[in-house]
Length: 77
Image 1 (cartoon, rainbow, N blue to C red):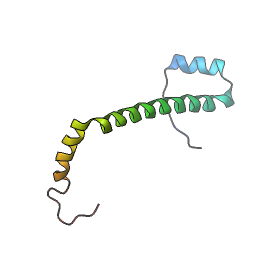
Image 2 (cartoon, rainbow, N blue to C red):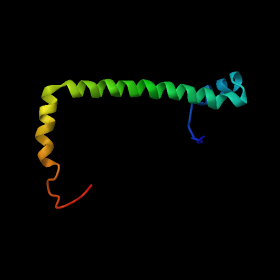
Image 3 (cartoon, helix red, strand yellow):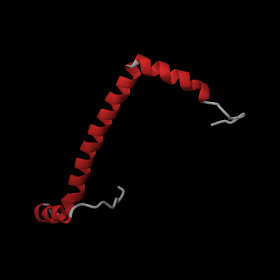
């Protein structure tokens, strides 16, 4: 488990303390954050899939491959 410092509006914090018992808050907040992260990951996946299917964009990206080693001499990454 890792502790994370977050800031929330004072009114929301007051409501949270009034409605949620002490030892349930972290679990509830973690659940909500996990849901939001999952939603955002899904949106990023959909975006990446669209990019992969976009032939014109992929052709343009391929054109930029020539710059990958531009100005680098025997560099290993």
